[in-house]
Length: 457
Image 1 (cartoon, helix red, strand yellow):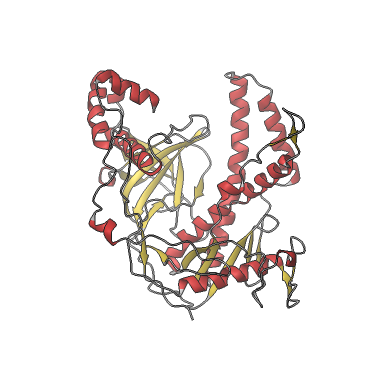
Image 2 (cartoon, one colour):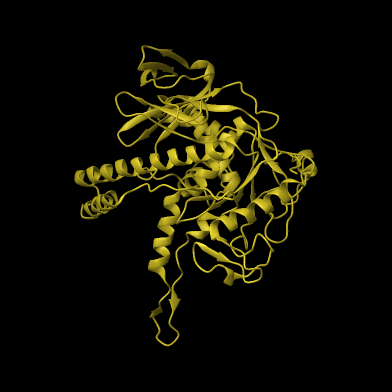
């Protein structure tokens, strides 16, 4: 971003705010100046500018940063599906014709199931993959096959998912010997010199092991999402702020000794952060919302405050009732139950109360008036902004409020390459050229709308 501002100053262009249209005009001039830039498909460059404009709009121009080439997967997107042709060569291979790249051969392991809308090419490790966004033509069912059924989901560390029905969904993604092997790979990487070929080889080995663990985590999230949405009309999660929960412990200065610090439990907090991030809490929620499009389930989130300290029988809140990680014994009525199951029941109670209260439908994402330096701070709101209502705080224990139910409308679909449990939901990826094949769930390119919530008896 600073380099962009310097370049704009050198050309006499405004530096306060540069939108997509101005950048697209500058892109034409840059192609004439740099021959290598003209060789890149123009639509791919425009998609990058659109992503940058959206990032600056959502987070501010000073918070938008370029992705690291070492920690991010390079990818580019072809937005016009009409110019993309896909032909199947045989049982295992197919090819796609991409603008300016021609025919690209890839591994075929899943039918597309619809017309191609766009394609994304990305690299992961030493292999290239291609994703297709297709329209499957499926509409979400008007109601679930089992209306009125609901389930509360408590996510934890000891057990990844605990439901209000008393069921536990858990999986260990890395065994003991694998953890030791991962630590050895990290030690080998730390002993190498930055920029050397040996370091690059060590980094590839670390990345390959991390990919293996991530695929296990994605598979567990897909299976859990299918189990939750198949038999339940209402699914309630806690609105967990994982980023805040995994923040580093702040140092505590010693008032008696300047320059010294008191114990702050940083080592224990670091271990807890690793455990939380290893479970993939957010991935489970994303997979559940993606799968709910095909079952008609409604997924809502509630305030997590006091859900683990409240008795689901007498509704008394007392932190001493939580005797241990797994034992909950109410100090008022004596009710005893597994602590995570008790919390999941409280989550379901809060979700039912919130889901039963409806409000008029408004479009999610109605843009609010922005106030930036160099722009008009007090602008007239548009019609969509004038009709949009601010969202109240999420429901919690014991006080409950309603903000409506999220429903996913558009049936855009990344199809590509290998089904996991259910037909047609998520992103499929196929290796361009030789390499292994895998699949990743996601919910990109799906329009979100808020509609009046249904009453749950």
